[in-house]
Length: 502
Image 1 (cartoon, rainbow, N blue to C red):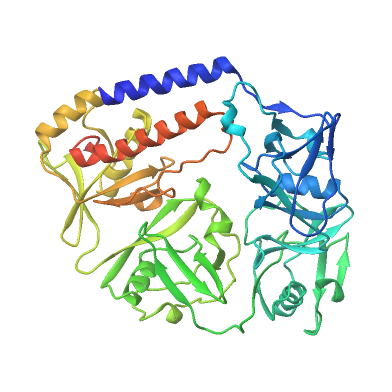
Image 2: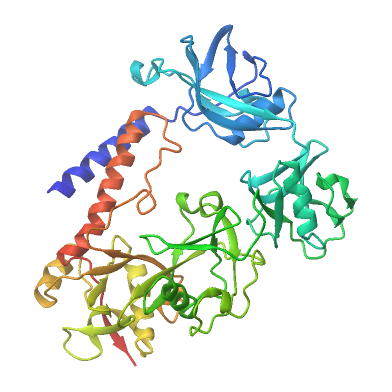
């Protein structure tokens, strides 16, 4: 009944939202004037239809700041949302959405202070959108201490070819930003970039304080690989020391050279997981992968891609003993997966079918140490569940397989409680497969234990694209429903049961 009431409420809110219509408007530069800003962090003041005001800072980002700053004659800019206006100017624009290429802030999408919204939504609260405009010729993306090297030229940023770009070149880049040291991160390490490669054949001597003081070829780059150069900067010299951390979600982070980063999924398997877990005091470990396709798996949060394809065999005492331990040489980091580990002290993962009518069918369970777990189906559609059943059966040595319970969720839950009694200590959930995998290890998923806190990383709750209170309520209700779908697995519902075929 609770679920039905919540679903009805959510539907009603969505209908109301549709009836109100979208309040996004494609702005016009007519009637909008941006008042001057300097190169210190500044509040953006706007005159709209002759009225001076400020911009509401929610959803204000670097793309919006870039447009403001370039409109003022600067090369680039960063968003500031921590600036306050002492005088209570009215909010004349809100929820600005620029892509960064517009010539005028009025050409971006934005909302006015619409009468459809409650007045107190826009009462003055001291917050205002701000910018920090810069005339830097060189910048790093996505972070101020690491990222792709980008050089301002002919009205846009350009990339530097990775071929021939070494630690001497990285030091020149980092000195430009005031750091004492820099190292090369190769190659195209931060994913796809929207800019073209225009600089190549970089040759530095080690004394330069700017990459443009080095020798280079411009506009006609000799860059057959098509990879761009990246760096990591620090005020401490490079050494072999590093710090490993296994997060509660299972994700592994690695801190080195004053920069936190991660392992690329490329070449990461149980051997690497075993060595990592052993370094952390466990007997062994199993590798699995999270999906990177979430708001909270972006490169700035993950950090520097420090290692890939390190070729452990699983018997090493520490990672430094693995075969290809080459810091910063990662190539093209897998953009779909994030490595994670599950450490154990007795026995690793073992899958089986239980409580079936024969050995080829039953509830899918797994054991690790003294814990028993199941696979949570969550809210996946029937086709996805059938795909998952086939993958599990292949992993168990069968040719194919399908769902054992083919009724509705409500019918399956009643049968599952009767036929498959008992509770589980942990669950595999949030599974994403493409269908041609031969085991779950090739998919992405999360491992959920009892009393696991549902953080923003687990079930994202974002207001991006929300432009009114009704949208807020819908997003909040949807997250509440997602959490309860996860919790339903603990009650014996939505557990995967399969029937396998030779």
